[in-house]
Amino acid sequence: MTTFTLLAPTTRAALLADLEGLWQSHLALATDAAHNTSAEMIANPEASADCKGHWIRVDVPGNRTFTVTNGRNDVSKTYRVR
Image (cartoon, rainbow, N blue to C red; front, side, top):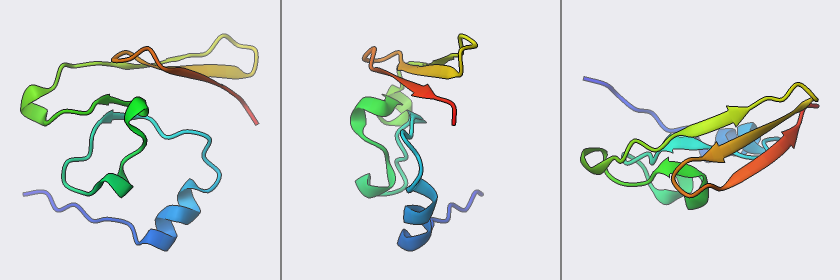
């Protein structure tokens, strides 16, 4: 049996404060919407039994940038390495 623990809201906010984007391969079904990223950044937003197997790809061209793409909806974002 696996036990899932949720971060306290203040801890979660502190960890996420500097993130430019949070991408998820699957919707976290054991929690509420506040603990998931935006729908466009979730590759598989359906229940596990209905999972379509969409991917998230990271392309790293070597110029101090990387691009993350959601295979479900083709949403992508390019980030610069800090």
